Image (cartoon, rainbow over all chains, first blue to last red; front, side, top):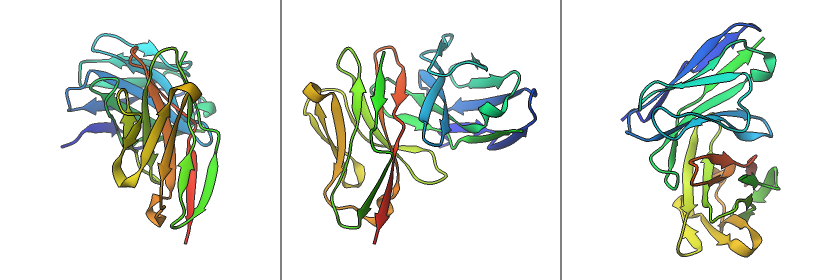
Length: 112
Length: 112
């Protein structure tokens, strides 16, 4: 049982480079989320998708774009990476808002 | 808008002592409330949740939490802490909009 799979696990980018973080879930969940985790800041919501075909901004969407490709996949794109985007990124999926969120193992991104 | 406050950034307790981690939320309606735990280098695991009914909820690993509407609080408790409980704990609030927001976390350190 894979659950939520994130790729890559680690990435180093130069300022101005672009990249896409991939997330896939095999639990047939409706909602998917992207968070970033920084020391002392907790998990901050970047974007979420309540259902296939919809996406909404979270608390810190600037500098990011997302695509809900299908029910399984939700990708996060950094068009022009900045050092402030150095963080650990977590993808999560949820069946319903009052049920458990399942998290991927995270992507550690460093922008130099 | 929904928000979550965890006033304690870092708590240190002795093994065997009792524990209470504080969580206050802001949301216009009855929220869905969660506590998650994150061990170092890991993703998040659900400890317990509340969305209706009995205001005292039991979770895994001997944890419990009490929902107090009048105080907008959902504090996590454990009667006797074990060294393996050392981790970071996150309170989260969900809403009918399917947005799941986390607090800044409380790091628990346990001394033998």
